[in-house]
Length: 326
Image (cartoon, rainbow, N blue to C red; front, side, top):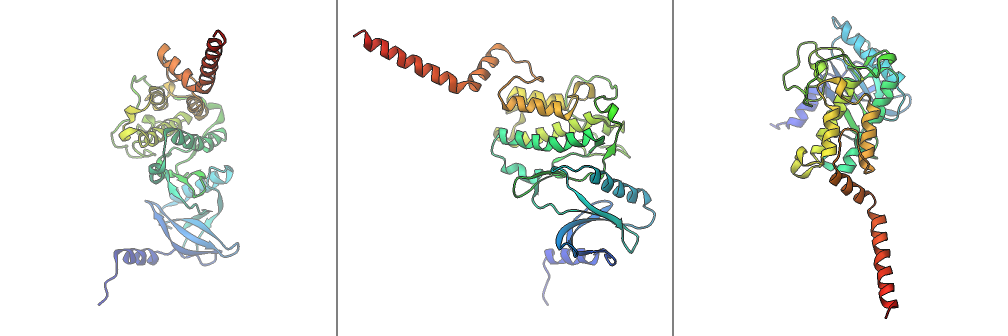
């Protein structure tokens, strides 16, 4: 008797659940991932001869709300044409009644996997700026993500960065994009460690406090999540993975982005990105008030080349004067 490996058994189990794609242009290849309401399959588009990702609901009956959510996700993705947002190609209903949507098949690894490859704080910050771009674009079109986290961000083999999984996305009025619901001011930045209540959308550790409470989300809720992703990423580039070992301005940027009260956070993703850019350019950031010594050190670092040239000139000038007098 020949025993099958666990990998083969898992593959056989996955194959038994192949979706019925009869009547469509797609042919299932293998299971990519399975969630609580749907499975994502690698499939072949038999017309254009390319690989695609098919997101298929697990149930056909009694789950009209899930079907509506999946179709809403496809509709939202179709309205957001940005290089950092995975495009949707098709959506519809299978022969067995299950709803599906067809998206670009993205190869690569999640930020959760990729973070170990980051070599420096600067590299991590530039990656956060790449994540901020599609998020700010979505906000400008009245769409909140509401579930930004390292597992929902993909880094492709050629450095492309895509924000994935818009299943919890929500449309908002653009007029309220820069505002936040009034909440009690909390002096500390961070998030609650309590488990989310029933009906709450988001991921613990990355969703905002107002989402944990079940309150309405705003663009500043996504700012909180981006700040949490930033803190997660920076912690892996810090010495001994210690967040507190990072420079104070960086910690202050994360703290402002993750303030418990939305009114104390950055007013937009663009404002957060601007502070990150200022830090990379060795300029003062709005989240941190530096003292005279810190300002002097920062200016010395920023103008190090000019300072070295001036000192070299003065040294050579001094030598010239000294030898000229002899």
